[in-house]
Amino acid sequence: MLNRPRIFTLDDAPQQVLNEHGFHGQDILSVNQFSMASLEYIFDVAEEMRAMVEQQGGAELLKGRVLSCLFFEPSTRTSSSFIAAMERLGGSVIPITQGVQFSSVSKGETLHDTIRTLEQYSDVIVLRHPETGSAKIAAAAAQIPIINAGDGTGEHPTQALLDLFTIKEELGTLDGLHVAMVGDLRYGRTVHSLTQLLLNYDVRFTFVSPEILRLPLDYMNQVKDAGKNVRETYNVADVIGSADVLYVTRVQKERFTDLAQYESVKDYYRISTELMEQAKPTTVVMHPLPRVNEIDVRLDSDPRAAYFRQVKNGMYIRMAILAAVLGKA
Ligand code: ASP
Image 1 (spheres, rainbow, N blue to C red):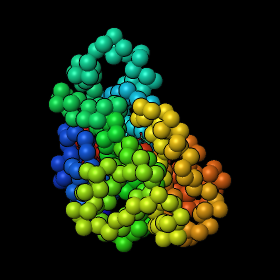
Image 2 (image 1 turned 45 degrees about the vertical axis):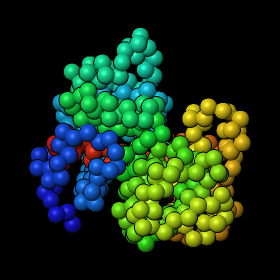
Image 3 (image 1 turned 90 degrees about the horizontal axis):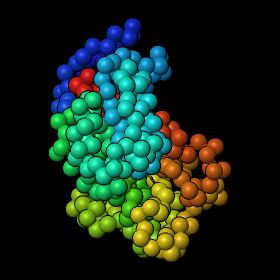
Image 4 (image 1 turned 30 degrees about the vertical axis):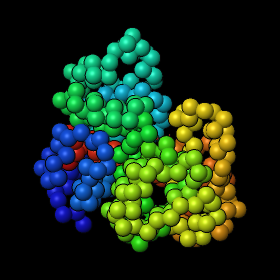
C-alpha cells in the first residue's frame, strides 16, 4: 500500500504531487545521495510506473519536457531505457547517443560548453562519460538536473537502483542475503555503486575476482567500516552453493592499458548450467550486461537468470527518476 498520493489515476489524468524527498531539480550523481527512505520512494514510484505501463503503455506526465541524452561511451540499455522512459511519460528526447563524433565534441568543444548548450534546449541531461568525476563537472556547469549514466570507473547510480530493485523484486527482501559479486570488481562501476547501496541492508558479501581485478580498497574499506561480513576469493565454486545473488560482470576491456593483461583474465570465470546445478533453487543470477562469455547462454531459460528482467526494471526505475527530478513524482 502506498502511503503517498498516487501519480496516476486510472483514467490517465496524472496529477502533480509534492515530492516529499526533495528530488525535484536535483542531480543524480552518486548512490550516496540516497537514504533508505528515498530508495523506497523511488521503488514505489517504479512499481507505479510498471502498473501504468502494463495497463496503458504510457502517460502524459512529462509532456512538453525534453531530455538530452549525451553519451560519450557506447551504450545499449542505459541510453535506450532513458529514451523509452521519457517517451512513455510523454516527453521527448535529444539523442546524442550514436557517438559524439557527430557532435561538436569532435571539433574540440569542452564538456562544459556542450552541457551549457544542451541545457538551453532541455529540462534534464543524462550523461555518460569515460572520465570518473565528469558527471560532477557537468552538474557544476548546468542549471538543470544532470543524471550520471556512468562516469568512467566511478559510478553508475541508476544501474545500482535498478539492480537493488531487481533483488527486492526477485527475492522479496534486501535483508539477510548473501551477495556474491563476480568478475571485474576493479573497473566495474556497477559493482562500485551497488556495493555502496547494499551497505544500507543486512547483507553478507563475497567478492570473487582474479587478483588484478579485486575490489578497490576504498570500497572494501567502506564495506568493512559498515561492519559487514565480507570475504574475497578467486573461485566462484566457493560461493555457488550459498549465494542468494550472483552478480556477474564483464571484464571491462576498454579500461585496460595492457591488452595482454586483459587476455590473461578475460576467461577467468564462466557461469555455466553445470555450475548452476550446485546453486540454490532460489539463487538469482544478475548481470548489468553486456555479457561477453561470462554467462552461458544456455542459462537464459533457467528461471533463476534474472538479467533480462533486470533490463526491464531499468526502464521503470528511470521513469521514476525522471519524474522525480522533474518534480512530477
Ligand atoms: N553496462 C554497464 C556499464 O555501463 C556494464 C558494462 O558495461 O559492463 O557500466
